[in-house]
Length: 464
Image 1 (cartoon, one colour):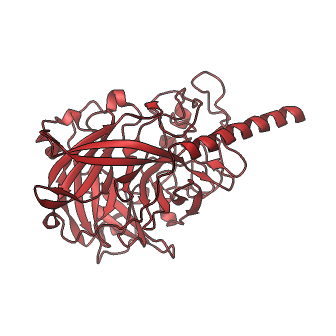
Image 2: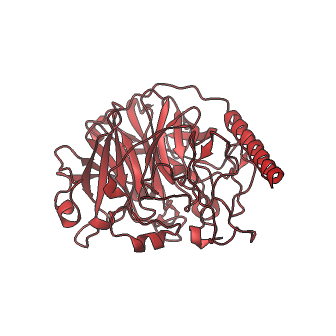
């Protein structure tokens, strides 16, 4: 295992700190709707030198309204990147990595979604009433998912019509035409058209992952529920098996009913893409920290990313940023189990250390205080030739919470490994898909949405 390259992304052709969504308005917290950041929440390889990256629910590190956890109507999206590796001439690392943002795709539903009214939830950053959580560019047939925590309706957290979405992982289908995104609010796993961002399907997940009593404030929601996912610690990771048939999600932390001082148990959920059939398996945390990602080595082995929240962005020293190899072959389905019974039936084969990022970066002179606190994106990439041998690549990325001043830029690390380092590794084969002209589709949709919103306001005034 060798660190091949390191690169960062600070902006796009639209400007520093700006993505290619084509959105030209400010959010409730005063920040631009096109703010670039959080890109390493999820990362996936899409063939050639193309990757897809997903930010989470948006910039909520800027305090303005604790009733909604400082969330905003930031539209859920994914970014298309090119990651160019070139041999380094005399550099400290063998390759130079150049990430470039090519496109930003907004995620939306053709059917109407549920949004919060904002009533009784305080104000925006400018002191005016909070108002609706619906993105202002919504229009008939285009209802965007967003990070506002009050965008939910009746029923459990798994209501598929809820407009709130907190993307944490992304994977692409083998034909290259669709993407799968997991989130923390439901938790949900949704399938979108890669070219347009339109919702295709919301998978039905096991009900024991949902919470019954909802709140726009995470701590309040935690206090109300004794079963289901913990607020802001839902389905943090998502893998797709190399044959493209099965999605494999992993929860960030133990479910409420699984919390046990005797051990740390998180759930792995497999989803048959064709039939929707699900299974749950237990994973015992090795470091005691939470899980941020899972990536498929083959159809039964996976790399699991365990990390603490320490390091750059937290003002502390990073300790645990490790990948472990886990095998679910022969594991017991724990869907019907909880608590100690689920813990005792955890995965049949213990996890094996694969990569310690803190130790690897220390060899490059990077102190623990400068290791990004949130290493969340993990993906295999294209093979490269180094020293006359073929190396597979593994990409890691950070979530900088949209605050580069304290958490650093969107950072990418590329590691090379040989077959002997990871026996059984099978690369996913993804059909190449053309990258549309940057920003054109997003700008068109945003423009139509603004026009639609203005027409609706004019119509309401005329009817009043």
